[in-house]
Length: 506
Ligand SMILES: [Zn+2]
Image: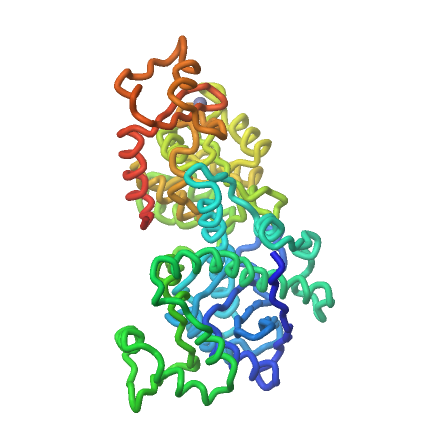
């Protein structure tokens, strides 16, 4: 890969330090910022979210090196940095990169509230997740049949950048001070690698963009602007396009005087260059926290008591809140998992299993027709799956299988699918649709079959309609039950349906 950017690391422990001044400058001059957070691993069954002790912010400045700030949340005055951070989170002019940052945002919000802040972090605009970036790259390389595995950040870094992230340090005590040099380097690299993964993605796309539209070859405008000091801001504002000014006005209600875009926030940012703007418009997402995301856990004792009296509607509502998923799931890398979501569905949510398989998620059902709760839990534990159920009786076993059971609240299959996708923050992309056998949960063989191969493979147990014979179709076969699938009308309808359900934009 070769072109790795260097980083300068700054530890920010107070607001009256040169490092903090540097942080503010870098925020103002960066159009891409990568985020990560560390907290002390929580093992006991405490009733609140983990306290975030370190927030890492990597700023792309367009120099030879990027600035990486390690904001020490155990010592800095939280109310003094809340606004600065929140402005950056919601700024339409800054692309934010993260790896499943929603969970970090929940914990950050809780940490800042406990640190005396009135406001919370409810939203991150112009966000891109490294998982979707990785999936786009895979899609480009392998086409529709790209490998479907959901990878850990460490695996993605290794593959794209040849950087190894230490697992040992990831699980080290992030509340201990002072941080060791290894911890600092690890923490900084964790955020900085996101910028570099984005570089790989961007260089892939820029080729495409410039090929499509030769007008948009950007001759280092951003570099020129980023190179000089803050007086360049006036030049920047004059150069920024009318469309950007209008965009800025409508989004924030700003005043524009003498060609200067002035904003009433702590953050005065640079406009994005055109290529970046295109990327953000096409791929930018938004993280929104709902009230329920910010609810801390309620003690297990209460869950159990309420589970016993289900008839009262109000009580049921409380039960629903108290069993909200708090993670991490057993496949999480913090628990030594491989990052691939795996579910086990009991008979009450059997229909959901097919829906999950349709979007490429591993969704098993128990081998026996009438398993008892012990068998279900054993299988979930053994195969590191989360048991999905609507059976409130099963929740009594939560002591035995912590983070291993989730009660599905929705009644309709489509809504259940959405609920599970949102609760577990599953990333579903179009190329994941129909990558798994809906009959048995098996995976398809790697290479699609030709019609001749398919006819041969189908002999004796499945009829392939004659009308398919002279069409140039691809067939897939389940590795497990050998069922054949093809890209017919049914397939397209199913893809469309699930794209609608999952609100996939493409
Ligand atoms: Zn199958």
